Length: 228
Picture 1 (cartoon, rainbow, N blue to C red):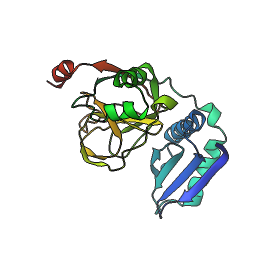
Picture 2 (picture 1 turned 30 degrees about the vertical axis):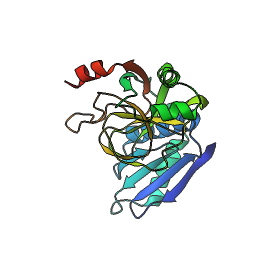
Picture 3 (picture 1 turned 180 degrees about the vertical axis):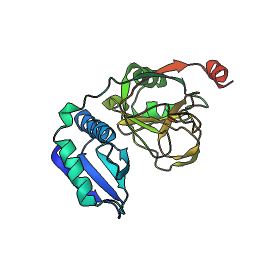
Picture 4 (picture 1 turned 90 degrees about the horizontal axis):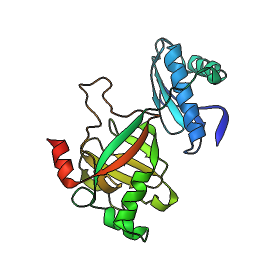
């Protein structure tokens, strides 16, 4: 549900959470994107940075030069004029993935959970395109969705201590990619050879909020070629 007006939650003495809705939905997402764009264009000098989420924005400010009340007033003023901020067309990104085998250790389990075949899971995953709702958890990790009901899959009961970088996973209504090795509880169905995060590049993240992603299948041999 979209909120009629922003809901504010203080997060310490220098941060303010601005909630714009309470569900993963494109209408909420577009409002988050518009407010994020409005903040970037307004460039209030007392605001250090903003971090967008599924339904909210975290605002970090300098408490020595402003107050949370002044930040709220700035956001309220921007909120009432969000229609003036036109969102750019989403970038369409294609991501190669080697599914199953050593790259997708949970593919068979996911297929059994949905009472279908691994090939059907792969076909469904590659037929759809996914919106990048936010980047988080670890640098460059894209939270994407929404998955069709036939792919909605629970997280693992026991997370792995180490998920290889590039791993493509499913969790509830989401699909995502681990940019680097980390612990994780998503069901891993494949791996991409692409590097999603490189701190030496500008921007460092391959994907950003609002992008559209489509996966395409490659073989293990092609995966080895990509990795050279």
